[in-house]
Image (cartoon, rainbow, N blue to C red; front, top):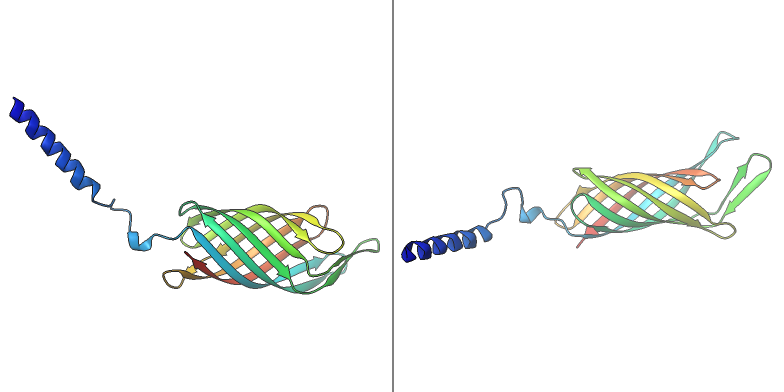
Length: 177
């Protein structure tokens, strides 16, 4: 009986040891993505002026820093600098002057499938004069180029509290490590 117990324990421990050295079938270590991502973007921001039916198109540069908790969820700090000063005419002779505004947001990132990334988060627009709280909704599509590099077209909607709204279209180059 003692030999049987010893043989059984040896058999179980050998099996556990060999199982620990294998990878699950669904995991591919060559496709694992890194947690940190930085991206530089170039884009344009569309500012609709409702009472004149005109639109302003403002060029912008962006810098995104992202941390991915896993392949589906992440947190991003997105910054856009509009590289032009402009004046928004509001109904009732009210005008809002914006000098090179900086939009910074802290976004929750969700990747439902493939390279599609949905994002939502609060932010702040900082410029000389008045600053605005805002809420950002957006989507990106990351196209993997090589092991660490990607291209990402992006589309954002920013709604400023009690003020104007903007639409942004951009194109970014990202690096993961």
